Length: 166
Image (cartoon, rainbow, N blue to C red):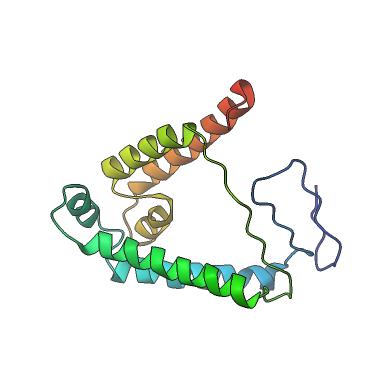
């Protein structure tokens, strides 16, 4: 199935999503280049800030250092300010599309999912974003963690359909 490229027709999604992407048109190779550039810059920042360091993450979980709490706290504050500015000034995307925020509903399964995620983070020393930065830094063994994360995501999707989980 080919997605429409460089058109103003909306992309039709096969199923409803909590956070639908209502982008009007597909992006070509050059359009996707910006994601590669931003991802590369993001990875460099992760490496320089030592966010991908297994030792820094272990320090955080053992409450031996404020480093990771400072990074995460700064990200939360920046996100809070950014979302507020987007809502107040009704800032649009680069393509002129309106940014919509969908309210989230609490589900008890989020607690169990969060605990499993945190346990995996503590054991492996990485959450999904830093995995790619760690692999890019030459820690090839982290590919095992990445494959495990992909398998876990697949199992969640399979269980969600089978047991009607939300």
